[in-house]
Length: 394
Image: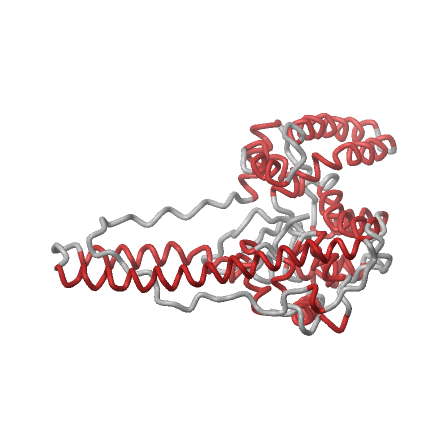
């Protein structure tokens, strides 16, 4: 399970997504003004001086950053080897310094460079796109719920049968979907604000990415088919016929999802195709959606159990698995409690993931990250959607 903390850091991620476009626009405006006339020799000399300063500062920073992240990776490798042998974890098994931050001069604008148009913002597919793809690629129309409470009941039934606790289900829902998100809520669109835009394909109560949907269908498709076939056997003839038609579509989708090696990168490629978006529409289906949304949480629980972590995971601990990936999340949970006040969150990320997830830097030690996660869950579990979900366990 490899998914970002969509709801909590969505606005930060959105600002980061817009930043390159804004920066490019500002740079283009500056170059346009500068290029109205040919740059003077003095202007070019000043540019070269600034470029030299920037290049030197950047090289120094990159050398420090490379050394830091190499140390993080090496200590992680050694730490995981110790965990496999049930050896004691000590402070020296972590990098205790925070990652370096570039603080040198900005890259200067070349006054002689041609004007470049701002690149178009990447389009994020929406629910309407998922539904259109499902109809066009597989002739499939999800059976959407007649009401929100109908989907919630279906979800709770599946989650409870899978062994998930009320605390896990309700608090993760509150955290991921904003406390009142509907079954079709998409990341960035949790609140109906003017100008709100989707920031990813993350969808539903537990915010599955399209890649999550493809991966789950590839890995758990047979299990889903078995569950739904057993359900069909208990239905009336008309309802059974409808579900059996859906099962035929699911089998075709599963074959598509298994057409590549079982890896996240390969599944991600499929997820960004029309057929992949069609698979993602399954989250909107009253029969399949709850299975997908539940399985995302259940996989982390099962992974922890398989690794010998016998304690029932709290909702915040489950979210750590979601945020950092199951292996790194379990690494956090196995950390001696006394070290959580000292160990930077960077120990559990790849550098690119850390940079894309600024919430981890803002709450820069593990204890603060866990506390912040719990605080959001406490606050948003009080909202109407979370309360309604909780009531279904009673």
